[in-house]
Image (cartoon, rainbow, N blue to C red; front, side, top):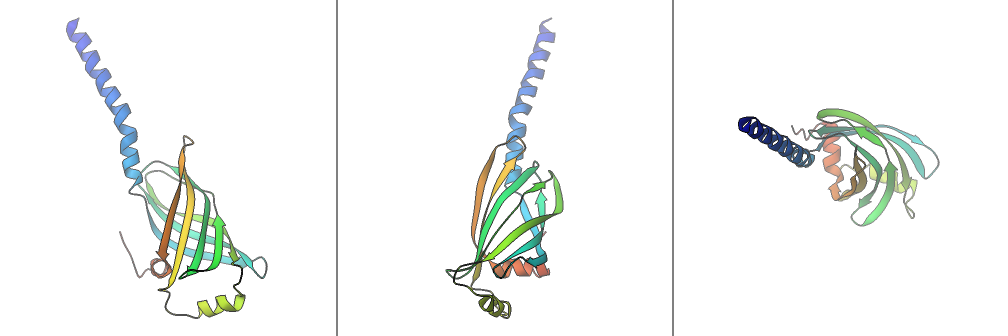
Length: 168
């Protein structure tokens, strides 16, 4: 009888350890999520100052499934905002490396003209251009956080989209 009870105590202890440690392992894996690719699929003008865009984003997610919503950002040259964008939502599957389509709305910032943007597109060097982005990342149980990333060099995104900066 005593042996039976000790086996039950060990089994319950192991079960409790698994229940306590499993979520923390998934949280640790959340730090390993990375964007593996990014490209523009399409841009459709809506007006003289805005457009609809479709981005294709590769996400390597070794963790739990999550949703990405309320994506907002700006594209700027040094400190001058050129355009703003917003989009979402997308549902990212758990434990996979997959490609997702992110629909966005892009608007030209106040004080910037279409001619200014055309001049930007003609440039070969984008080292003074940056992207600031934020989004709400929610896990299936409803919890989530607003994440912000700033000063992302636009040139690095262009290199990643063109395949110049392959990382695996």
